[in-house]
Length: 197
Image 1 (cartoon, one colour):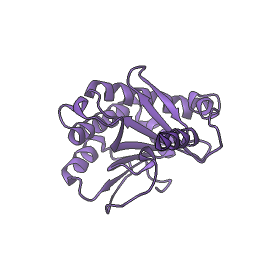
Image 2 (image 1 turned 120 degrees about the vertical axis):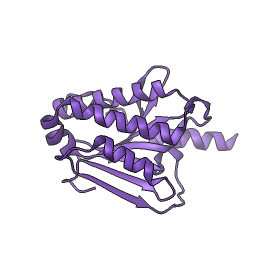
Image 3 (image 1 turned 180 degrees about the horizontal axis):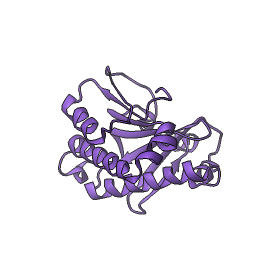
Image 4 (image 1 turned 90 degrees about the horizontal axis):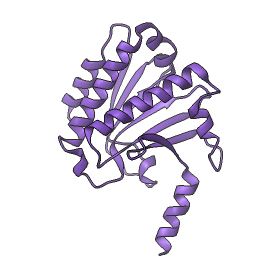
């Protein structure tokens, strides 16, 4: 996504355009640059949480460094509302009835201060209230990151990676209500061990 863009949405072409239009209308602001792109269905060989989800919300550095400072927390409320509307549409009225641990439907990707990308992997099988907690917690982490880098929680958590990486992955733990680091190397080792059984 271009650095001039504040928010980007990438969605698989078989997702209803109404879902995307509703999100766009909810977060719309005359000063906000939004880029929306559909993409064809793809087939990927990767760990499921690293795959592109059906809908991806990209939050670019200019959103936090410029736009949000001008618009204030009011726009965060619009963004939160848009994300929650989108998750309701994607997951249905009772998302807690879904049996996957990690979502293949929705994720958020952010450009960090050090140039790395961070993907927030949302859970499945939890209530809409838990999604709201997850979005609020994500916003707090990102606000702290853009105001306090390099002395912020995201940077500190990322230091726990077993091997350096340009891409970070956090997953939301619905029981503890916190975002936790997903370590690709450790996850691959766990998957490999499962296959041996």
